[in-house]
Amino acid sequence: MTITLDHPEKKRGHMISSWTEETSRAALEQGDIETCSFLHVHADKVEQVRSLLPDEETLNRLSDLFRVFGDGTRIRILYVLFEQEVCVCDIANLLGMTQSAVSHQLRVLKSARLIRSRRDGKTIYYSLSDDHVRTLLSQGTEHISEENA
Image 1: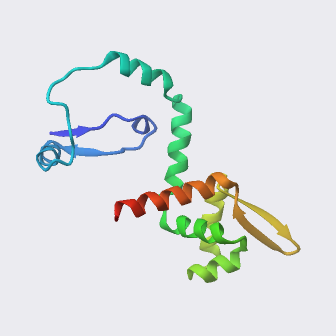
Image 2: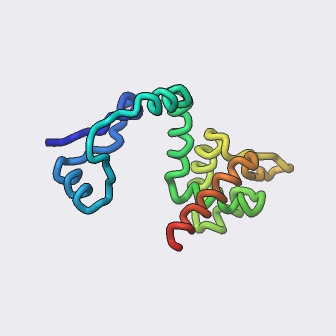
């Protein structure tokens, strides 16, 4: 029997996760998933949290934003821009990629409003769009560093 986790993304035509009953049982047995030993819904907490949750559109937009961070090449480009404003040629050289491949990823990052560009003569320079992006990268790096400690 296959159990599909219900998730807003599923409604948008994406399958988020699919677990078999055996996978779930194995995860429980290994202690990977902690569960309550009995079913009791804390209605007051549920209602309090429900009232604080962002609306569905906000959650979907946030999901789309984090999906952009799910590509290693885009993360590498963001880290280049974390350090310095540079042009496509510089990014391609630093990452050992073609300018075309870099341009494609820059379009994705720009459409997600994670980077911005400015023209100086014939050259277009790219940089992080604001300090929020810098903070996301810094916090993410700090978080994964803690996992290794």
